[in-house]
Structures are given as structure tokens and as C-alpha cells.
Length: 252
Length: 247
Image (cartoon, rainbow over all chains, first blue to last red):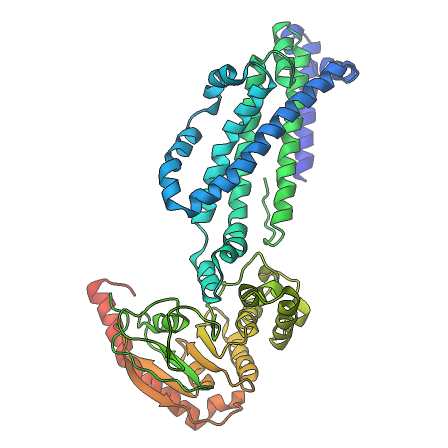
């Protein structure tokens, strides 16, 4: 039922848009039209450059975000369990988390040059703080009664870690991943605007400058699709790791 | 804050001993000390003449509600203690399966705790403790969260499971009827700081059918415990109301 409503509103929007352009209520040049976007899509999918751009954006994102998970989860676990390390490093992570990470872009461009690698680094920086902080919070909020159970059965530190801390932290890690995905996507997009070679961000920027508005829309749609695909992946991972949780209504 | 004062209690092997007392009288604290989860600030807990300095394989705790690991299935929850003792996986699963069956959850091995009712969860809680085959079972208000009927059923179940095994049980509860029904001895504790004010042997033969609960003898035991507790409950309530100090 909710899907039906959503589709209906989408159809109304598209029809209204097309009608407004046909009736010349708005400029075709500035606003393009749904039919022009479809035409652009039909011609673009036959151009290899289009696919190269998609691949470039996806690769940058997957590398940057993947790195933030590989680094962020262990660091978060350490910060959550080792108070001294948290005193040392915690404020830095908080600082990184409360900065718009894209502000590091000029610096990153100086470090790695204006290539796709800059997008990878900035995606990493954007996601990693959220992953670390959420993981750390997860460890810190483990229910004491579960730790008491482990202790009463004589669990070793490793056993407690594997059977209590890790599973209890998973929901928090997932929450961190969700935030991280959003941050990293924004960063990849912005980085591509500045990076010379390829990527959907680049495609949108070039199309905008040459007033190919239909390709701007197309690029945006592709970006949305990539974003949704990534959120879906996170949700699948979540389902895999949390099959033990009671199913609740009201998902996203 | 002093939870317990001058508590001296001796429990014989195979005895079922219950601690009752007003809220905050330190009965759970006492249980945690026997479990080795807390150290007494003075004095010792001795088991077979050895001082308790931490959790041990001779004891297992049945916690209050929802201490089951929600991320493990019934079988893995039941085998948890064995896992901690590094019992080989196959043997652990086998032993866990036996206790799961003993507590009546045989057909729920692969369910997760949230799929079980409150009573079933406490069966599993009991199974997890029984799996390590402890000499002493420590039970901290295990049935407190259950509805009254389920609670009575679980009391009978506990006796059915415990009676042939000869394990020592130290059981904490607020429910006087539960204490009398289950125990060989009921220990009545005072308001905080907790002291032992009575040690009542319950001389009702076992096995004890439900109908026992309406026997004259049974009711007299209940009255005895209740009368002893009333003064303490009044004291606790007075203190809460005058000092504004909830317990």
C-alpha cells in the first residue's frame, strides 16, 4: 500500500513536469523534461563513457567506504574497551565527526592529486568517524547483565568479547554504516566535481556547464540509484547479522 | 552503604534453601557473593572449606528474567557454560541437548529467546545453569517476571527437575508461598542492613503436590514467615517515607 501511494505521487510529479514544459510554463532549456531525460538515458546507455563513469563512482565509493568499515570497526572496538586509548584518540575522532569532512578535500587533493584516489580518501574520511563512534558506543552500552552472565560462567576475556561484546555491538555498527554510507556518497560526489577524469559527479558537472539539463537529471537519478543500491546492501548485511532480532514494523 | 551485616549461614549439601526479605535487604547481594561475582567487605564464603574468590565450576547462577543471550539459539544458550569451560563443541552440544530436553524445550532447540514465552525463557535459563552440572544452583528471583499461573507451574517443574539430582539450591524470592513450597529451609532476612532473623525448616515431605499449598501445615509456615516479615516490611516502608530514600 505505501508503495502504491509513492508510485502515484511519482507519476503525478512526472506528468505535471512534462505538461508544464509542453505548455511552455517553464523553460525547456533550464528544466528539461521527463521525455528528454528518458531520451538521454536511451542514448547514454549505449555510450561506454557513461558506464565508465558509473564504474568509477561505484569503485571510489566501495573502496573508500569499505576501508572505513575495515578500519572503523576495529578502532571502535578498541576505543570502546580500552579507556586509555579512548582518552588519547577519542577527541580526535569526535573532532573529525563534527567537521564537515568535505572540508578536508583541498588537503586531500594536495596529498593524492586530483584523481579518483582523492574521492576514495575523502569517502573514507567521511564515513570512518561515524563507524568508529557508533561501534564504540555499542561496546560501551552492552547490558551489564550479559557481562555478569559471562563472568558467572567463567568466560575468558576472549570468550566474553566474542559471545557478548561483538554480537551486542552489531546493531550499533549497522547504524554507523548507515550514517557512513550517506556521508561517503556526498563526499564522493563533491570530490568528483573537483576531480578531472571521470565519475557521475563529473558527468553532472560537465552537463550542467553545457546546459545539458536532461543529463544533469539523468546523472542525479543514477546517483540516487547507486545510493539506494548501497543502502540495500547494508540492509542485507543487517538482516544476515541480526536474524536473531524480533521483527519489528516500521522499517525505513 | 552496608547491604549485609553479621550474616552467618550454613547450607548442607543437597539442601534447598530460600532467602526471603524486604526489598534491599541484601539477599541478592548474598547470592552474588556465593556466586563469586562480589567480594564481601569482611568475612568469607566457604564451599567445602574452600574460600570463594571468584566464579567457579561448582556453582551456576540462574539470573532474573531476560539474561539469555538474544543472539544465540536455545541450544547455544544452553551450551554457553560448557563453551566457557572449553568443552569440545560436539560434547557441549550433546550435553546441552540433554538439559534442553530435561526442561521441556526439546522441540525449540533452534529458536531464539524472543520466540519463547516468559516461562520457556526461564526454563532455558535453568537449562543453561544445569548444563554445566554444578553442585550448587544459585537462583536470583528466577520466576519474578512470570504471571502467577506460569509461576506455579515453574515451581513444580523446578522441583521435578531438582528432586532426583541432589544439587544444593540457594534461591532468592519475594514470594512467601513460593519459598515455603520449594524449600527445605526458609531464611528470613531483616531490612537493610540485612541480617538473618529466622531460619525455618520446612518439614513437609516430598514430593509436594500442588494441593499441599492448602494444607494447614503449609499455611502455618506461610503465616510464620509472613509475621516475621511484617515488622521488617513496616520498617522499610517507614524509612522510605521519612528519609525519602527508595530502596
